[in-house]
Length: 284
Ligand code: SAM
Image (cartoon, rainbow, N blue to C red; front, side, top):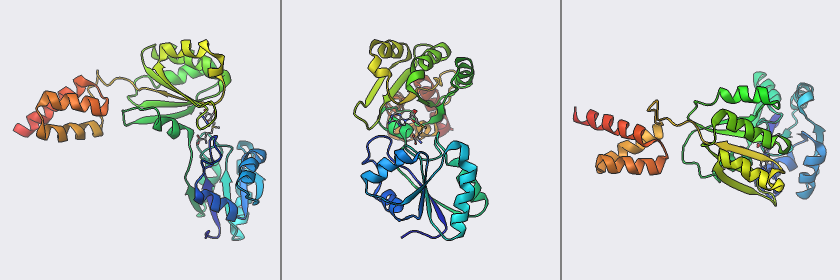
């Protein structure tokens, strides 16, 4: 049962048409209007699930105009859903302008969660470090791209990028120029689709791997790059701090540090220094 005068922000699949929640299907079938980024793409999904709701077009260049239309519909006590071509609206996709405008004017906005390429890649990459930073698309041109990348070199978070097939080689080359060859990268390609590939290697090896097989340069990409080492600053995450504290209650210092390295993946020296501080505090 939907609430009148409400906008529903509905996540759709990033490939496999069955990756959509039951609630999303209910909402798409029940709303009065669906505003879709490209009607022919969403039409495929709607037809697959036998949904016949009326659609209007929503894309980046007409978001403000569509926002006005949606407002008029909500004022007439209608319900509206927005969907993009793939994944979660507003994440490197249209949606943000409409949602911002509706919130500012007191309308109700309800998220219907589901697929997102970044989170999907992260879930299967096996990255132990708990913090990440979503960058999305980098600038198209190499000079601007490198300038953006240079602002990220010291951040101790996994960096998440979206990339298109025609820019993948150029992007990896720029990543190597700015970050060197040693950082680990996960290349997540064509997630949930026939040629899904999740490849983990060093940045240096990534270029060789991609260039060895042109098929690996096709499709849609999420790139996950490990963050800067925290060794120089001795910074550890709150989670690592908590893990150390718990382990130190029952284990000798060296063993606790070793286990904390395994659990958190954080720098051994930084964890060791922190363990000494925790021990000192507990004695004084
Ligand atoms: N809103 C979407 C989301 O929630 O992830 C992102 C839309 S953005 C316009 C499209 C980009 O997302 C692609 O260029 C690619 O970088 C990434 N992407 C989308 N689907 C993907 C997939 N199946 N596999 C890998 N990357 C994907």
